[in-house]
Image 1: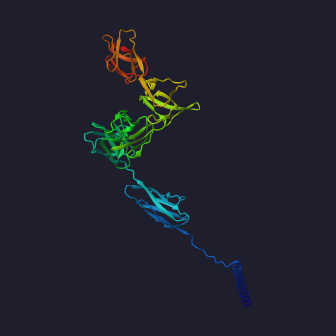
Image 2 (image 1 turned 45 degrees about the vertical axis):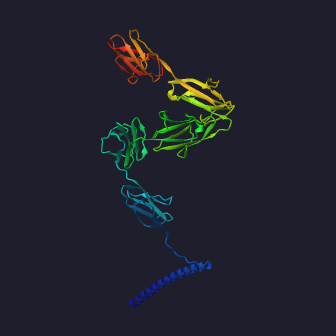
Image 3 (image 1 turned 90 degrees about the vertical axis):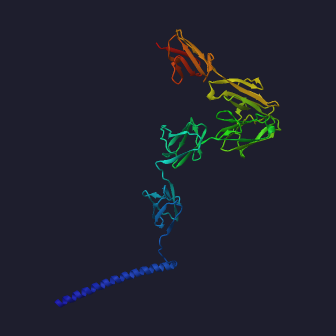
Length: 491
């Protein structure tokens, strides 16, 4: 019985092994069939070999770094892969401003004070680096005094007017701050330059902004140079070419023009000549309401080219006081249009032409002056109904003269029921009852032994800036209105 049972177990094990072998055989046949089918199907379409290649990589090169040493990892990368750029060293006195790549749509990001990174684009890139100067707390300013006299040099902060202690001509100044320079005791006019840039002067102070670097402030006497005038002597009379200092409005001698002077050239050729071109050392000076230039630090040559006028045209010989503005117009379809290119010494008009003009006191002189005479060929001119003067050319030049005169305002002392008197005088001691604006006036009050306590102008107590009272003597500068003066007395 036991032997029978053992045989049954062996039979079952044999059947199990056979089943496993059958299943494995079927699976192998199925996979083989599938592979055969796939291969066969592929072969029926075309003979294709399928291979798997590595992803493409792109190169990273280093361009201009301005002396900055970079560590780049990796030096080639696939598209989208992170590339790290670390700053290893920077030249002395410099700092990294930016790290850049030459692909416009790639942004280099900062990942720490000295670390950067970017994502690799689908192309090769070149890395570059920009630097800037390291901004220090202060920079040395060296003052060089080339003038002969022993001036006292004062430097300080512009805003607070704080003065720095004197030093051995070297000052440590904060960059981008505004400073002033004042030279006390200078016996001559001075020129001040900051690293060869001319500084402007206002009320004795030179102002400048300290650059973010060591700088030199140079003080030197202003020199004078000559203007060599080249022109056709037949085209000008003795007063045909005049040089004028635009600041002081005084005439300048061509043999001695101070460096930096703004020069206005009044060029008036004879009636049968006109100016063709004006050059300064070969460079054309444009006629911008006259010919102007700033005197450089060397001699110059001004060449004035003229030609004889053969056409039937004439000039306006204009003589106008400096306080007056004059504007010229032409009438076009009933409208007055300004002649924008009018310039008296050269603008010409044909015979029979009529032009118009208006004249007025310049704004800064209003209340001080008023128009006195308007003369056309020495005949008083009158305005038309539109408020314009007119000039009609008739085969000759026209002489136009416009002058101004002071406006005078009355000065009256009101004793206010007292026995007081007042003597009102001008700057020369002449007794006056009127004065023009800015004229110096002296008033002497008398009322027995009493002293003046307070002064009133038109009922308002005089401010300290309006005048100065010394005992019973008052001095002031005339204003642009009639003035009634009253006083109170000390007991």
